[in-house]
Length: 290
Length: 290
Ligand SMILES: Nc1ncnc2c1ncn2[C@@H]1O[C@H](COP(=O)(O)OP(=O)(O)O)[C@@H](O)[C@H]1O
Ligand SMILES: [Mg+2]
Image (cartoon, rainbow over all chains, first blue to last red; front, side, top):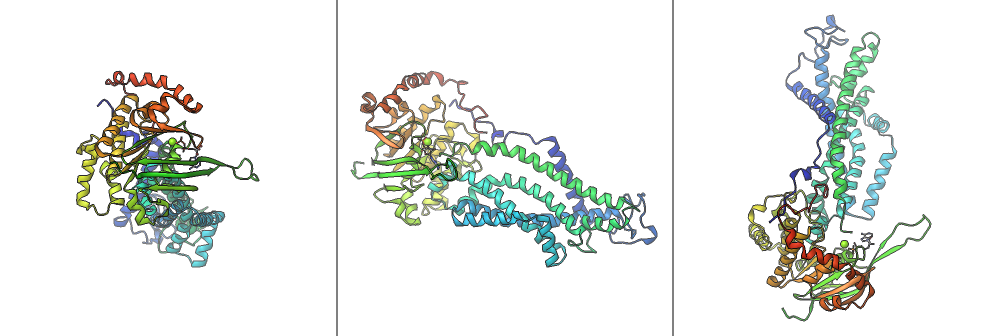
């Protein structure tokens, strides 16, 4: 047989991840690692006050200095990463967990189900997300759980839309028609064929939503609507720092920097993944047999 | 084998698709992809459907395999109307009609290993085949198309175009159907591989007594595998009859026009054996499926 197999790289899109995406991924991984480390170790007890040593500049004992109660800023940033990441992960997970099945359902069933899901989406998109999140937490009361709910709700339509769009382009593909000829129902096809084939697009979106959720969590906490003391979060640290903004801007700059770097890293990673995945999705759509 | 009742029949089937409106207030125009087509396919017979790209061949294939219901007319598989059956009965009926698609990459789920792809019709259509027996059936179907057990755990991208089409054929055979609808099964293949796959169809027909509905825009290909042909133009059948007769004395100008393109293809056909030398295969430039 003279036929030559095609290279393996073909299915992977054959493209390398951009250097910026690697850098972004490294930053995100570092933040995640820091959060994990904070579970077992921080340089100091993040809640331990030392009023005699308040607003101290960086020293050997306190590499990033202390805050207005003399608490170690590095330890608090580490623990704050944990809260930011936990809240954001659960919120995005909630959004994807509900949004993806909704999107798959909409793409699998034409007619009123699709209409209903898409109109719900339009409605959700019509609200300014952060403002409404503020409203929700104001109504439900402040706290990490309610922040998760408020952020998660706005992730539902995003994931529903991405899942539906990617799935719709697959339904006309021959291997889906072949699956129907093989007697598979729409639900099974959605789970066994569609989902694995749109996973890439969902991961890309998940990365970007994760960055947005970190921002949203920080925003809510900054407004005092997210996690409550004695919980530590980057947004809370910003909130507490504003009183001392002129006295000691370091207290605001450090958590602000943590937020910016993390969000930037995740966005770079998401963009890089998207660049690598999208061209493939486009050409695979070609020749749906119709 | 000489049962005179047709295994597949279409009675005046039509299918129209809506086109985009020329302007928002205009009535929605439609394209009559298939218009009032009737045909019969006897047990073990082979019928060719030829016509230019866009004349409605694939649409007819989807109607005949009950992937879509016709707007008007009736499809009968083994004497029964698939569009009038409940799901369970439709599944039983589907075992007797399987399909091979044009693009062997697109008709195999890129995320599935070969054993799962080939076993899918068994899972969906033949629940009485025990899980433990599926493997043997899959291996048998692969053997029938000249592929060995080592292919079971590989993925579609690890095969050449011709091998992929063999996998697709194995999958179509695994439920032991009476009818195979092949929609341009060799059009995406390099000429040197086309001959091999066509011979495979001939051999399978002979050995299994398959009825074959063979769709192609290439008269030369149809000449080699079918006993009767129907020529389509813009959704209608313009000419039908025994293959040799129609090709020798085309009665319709459209057939003559299609035939006029054949000398070029004939040259390609006679050049086939010579081109099947190592290194001569240019079947997939890597950009093709990406
Ligand atoms: N799902 C569809 N939606 C809209 N138009 C379609 C669809 N499927 C086919 N058509 C149109 O119907 C006509 C026939 O298409 P098709 O059956 O694919 O032709 P062929 O297989 O002979 O190339 C074409 O004009 C095509 O654009
Ligand atoms: Mg076609």
